[in-house]
Image: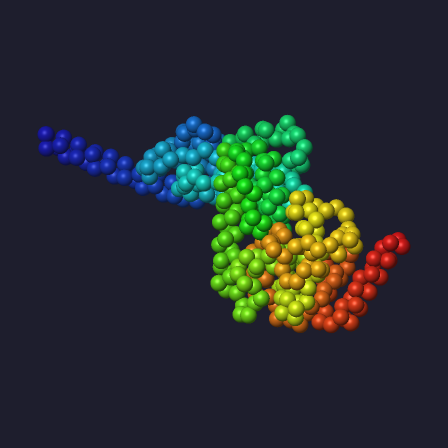
Length: 386
């Protein structure tokens, strides 16, 4: 009898183990299998939250099939204590494994609200945007001039958990503009003790977080520009008329200010290189304007004849060669153009149309250039007569 009882107990124990193993295998498969989410969602993980609250939210929104399995899987992978606050884009059909990785890896939020502080050549702007998960793109919800009082609703977006912040620097802005506008960014701290050298900042988009200092951000911009210039200098064409990388940076800043058309920057650079090599003066208006404004804002009017004749270090109608410093912060493409200009005989150019984005007509001779200028003057006259 005892033998039968022992045999039955052993059988029961084996069945329990078998069933337990089957359940465990099923749970493992469920944890790594494609999830039930039919469309992407933006998951908010609040500061101080835990996997129980997150799993409840995910289960309620149809992103996971079982909150229990989700929590057990995170525990088993030793990730339950690694939960990070933020806003995370959970893609459709994401597995529990993938979602666990998303909410524990940290880093910048991938959805929700984004605040962009844009520093442009002619103006600055603050944009508040939110990700449309269905369309996969950001939609603008608020926009304002940072020089004016910040609107009341801005604070709610700024203080929302997971909000991302960026400073976007346009190509061709001056260092004075950058320092001045960073002073308006309310989440940054500290002052810039010494304005950076003109041309030393790399136009780009920079992620920031509340409490970052303005000096630290300027340092990041300078380090980025140093790397760009060093790389371009090491890959430069032969026989260029620059004594050092700083002169190349000055040329790049002129190219940047002369054209907003990315496709023709290399041609514009070739014009100025050809002029230097032929001992011609650069005769470029942006340098004259910089000499008038010192890079502090926009001139806002035409250049006077007296200013074109004035002997200043930046008046390239009067001086030979390059001005003493860059006249703006050039982007990567303008730097590459200055150091690898197109192979051309052009020494003149003038706008094709009254729309600057349409680019320029280039010429190798004065007669060709005068013809292009005459065509442009006709367009001006036609507009004046409308």
